[in-house]
Length: 520
Image 1 (tube, helix red, strand yellow):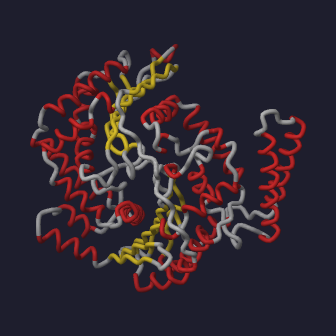
Image 2 (spheres, rainbow, N blue to C red; image 1 turned 30 degrees about the vertical axis):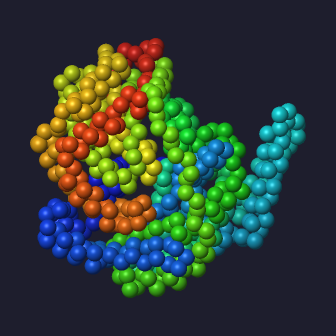
C-alpha cells in the first residue's frame, strides 16, 4: 500500500483519540479549560525510549479489549539515490515475510539457498550490464538464477507470519510507504500483547527477505499499472521531476523501471542496515493496555535489538526556482491541469498558514476554486488545492489539480486558477472565510479521531517529525492564531510565476470529445 499523506492542521494524517481529547481540541487556545482537558489526556500517555534509541508512545485507552500499534520508520524514497529508487518501498512488501523461525521449514538449508540466489544473480547481472553481453551465456546465467530461486522456494512457508496474526485475532495487518516514511500496523486482542512484542521485535531484529525477486516483480507490475499505463500517473511523475531538479522528492516512490530491474537483495540488506536502526523508529501503542505492563515487555523484546548508528540526514537541498517550468503531455486521455509552488517543510512556522490557504482555495464545495471553476463558470469538473505534496518533512509543493470540463481546456482552467491566486495576494480573505477555516480544522480533526489505529499513526508520525507527539494538537492552536495578514503575506511570497511548475495533459484523438469525470 503506497500512501500519500493528507495534511490537516496538527502536522499529521487523519487520526484517532479519546472523546476527552476531542473536547480539548474544541477548546483549543481558550485558556484553563483546554489546559485541564489536555492535561487529563496526557495522564494516559507514556513515552518510553529504550537504551538502543527506539521510542515508544503508550496510550491507555480501555474502551475495548484490543490495541493497535503503528511503527513509523523515518525512511522513505527521500533516502534513496539513483540506482536504487524504489528500494524503500520494497520493505513494505518484505515486511511480513518472516524471520529465521517464521516462514521457513528449514532455515539452515534456506540460508544456503538464499546465498546461492544472490551469487547467481550477481553473475547474471554482471553479464547483462556489459556493453556487449554474450547472449548464450546470459541465457544460461538467467536460468541458473531462476533455478536457484525455485530451490529456495521449497523452504518457504508462505504467509506464516500473517496466519499467526490472523489466528490470534489480529486484524488490519498492513504497511505503507511514502517519500518520508515506511509505516507498519495491525491490531490484536489485549491479551496478545507479549505475542506482539515477540513477533514485531523478531521481525525487525532478524528479518529474512525471502521471495525478494518475486516481490520486485510485483512492484514492477505496480509501476506499469499506476504510472506507465495511466496518463495522470505519467504526468505526476514528470511534474515532480520538473519541480525538483536536485532533491529526491523528484523521484517516484515506486522507483524507476531500470532500477527495479537492477537492484538486488544485497542492496536491500545494506539499505535496511543503514536506516532500520532503533533510533530511527517510533512505535505508538494505543488501546486497552497499561504502560506498567507494556514497558517490561518492550524492554525484554525490543531492547535486544542492537543500537546501530543513526542514519545521516538527507544532504541535498532543492535550490530556489527562478523560472516557470512546464510539462505538457499530448495523450488520448482526459485533459488535466496541474500546478505547484515550492513551500517550506512541515516544521516551518508558516505551516498552518498553508493549511488555511489550502482550505480556502480547495477545501470542498465551499472553497473558492470549487465555487468559481466548478459551480459558477463550469469550466472544471474536479478541482483540488492542497499543501505538502508529495510529502512534508522537507520543502514541498502547494498544488492545484483540476479536470477541465467537457468543451473546456487546461488553459481556461489555468487562467481561472491564477485569477483566484491573484485575488488571494491582493485582497484580505473575509472574516467568515477565516472563521470557517478554523472551525473546519477543529471539526475535521475531531471527526478523524475515531480509531486506535489512526491515533497510533498520528502520534508516531508527530513524535518522529518534531520530537513531540503533542504537535498533533498544537498545530490546531497555531492555526487559530493565523490572521488575514498572514495569508496575504504567504500568498505573495509563494504564488509567483518564477516559483511555479505546471503539468498539462492535452487531449488528442477521439478522447477529446469524451466527458470529464463527475465532480464532487
